[in-house]
Image (cartoon, rainbow, N blue to C red; front, side):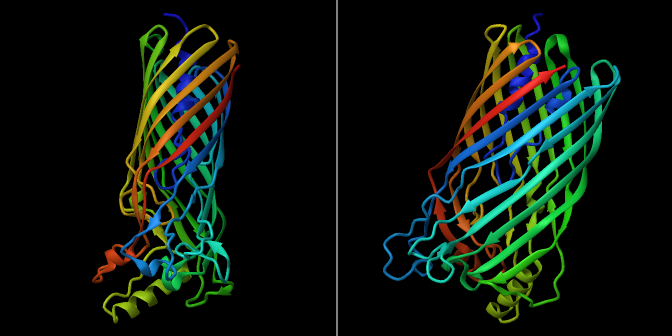
Length: 414
């Protein structure tokens, strides 16, 4: 068979990006660069241009200023970029070493300031609800190939996380004006997996596990600049979720490759409850329930785990040019969804093009269009065992939203 398959395999790893995945899932945490033959290096930049807007419920006039005719949010999603890079060295026929850098989780939403005051404060702070989360991850991977077609790999992963959140608007009631600044924290996790390949058939399967990583973060909390000190301050535990990736590729003809990726992320166990926010929420629920419920609620959490899948085909047209096309699906993390992430999964279509100026290096560009799932937005009290909690926590509808993602990758085999 012609040696088209390695080039097509590299092309597939760009188009399977997760730039608009559920919750804060961002990079997709792919290990495919580590499975490339020989010595290999790549660097990727991904950008997204989302349009996410919604409106408060017509049945909730209390969520907008009196006599307001405009209940819309306008676009709340900011354009963003993230980066990844990989270095793989084949130290011997049985031993390999790799470094994988990515930004696995992230969020950047900004509600515009509007006179309806639903999700913003046009009077005092003149700010809208805002959330920004940044993570960086460096994995060190060691691979062992006991037989020609089988690869075992594992290693540590060092991750940093930081963020800011501001809650504004009538939808937050007594929490309007809350600010939380999450200082950067670093912590260790691990990665492990195995792969099976038959190169002359272009068959490659890989199953990879990324562990949960536990962070203890110092959070500065205030209400419109007045520090919160309801209880003794303590670091907030936030655990970025464990995940599993299954990758599959197989040759259809000498110049055509079928590929797919299935990903599971354990968002159902993800919780953010800063110390002072938690104390304030406990006070609020105790008061509202006349003491029958005192456990409070979370700043952010998710109802369900995320599942996503990609299915595509790549084709080599000449010795220098190839392309790939795929369709993707993401389950989302449940509906109703958080005000800080008011979408429910997506469907997408992607197209990429790869150019090899020389056999040992390439440039790849890709584009994806996302149909974002409709969602009902809620605050963190939706699940509380209190009469009317579900209807009171439901604050808006976000429908007919979309996004465009772009990717650019350079790679070098040496």
